[in-house]
Length: 157
Image 1 (cartoon, rainbow, N blue to C red):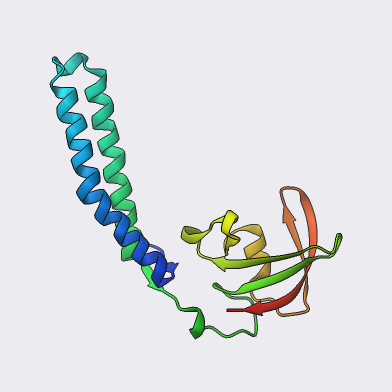
Image 2 (cartoon, one colour):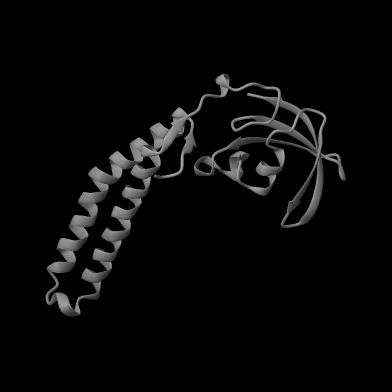
């Protein structure tokens, strides 16, 4: 049995759309590459054909992994979670105690993490350290740059 994957409804829709595109347009493109490579002659010495077949294998593996993610997904809604502590889908405002900078992050599943959008995985060092904490609590987090101390200023949805 596979592990439960927590997703927002929005992310589940994005995965469904990606699967649809991969199965329709993507498969046609791969099939055309294979057909084109096949037309170049002897398949036993055709590197282009082998590369296209390998690309097809990776492509199908990607579809399979996305489908597995959806199959084991549990859709979570931020409005169903309390604001008393940091949970998945919490928006957390943190103050770096050493330099007084303030940062905002949203905690999400590993499948939705995107550092540029300030979406941190609950399985990341910061995410793990914040889970279950409350406003006003100080947290020491070990990150690649070393130990950093933060104070939780706010938790919202």
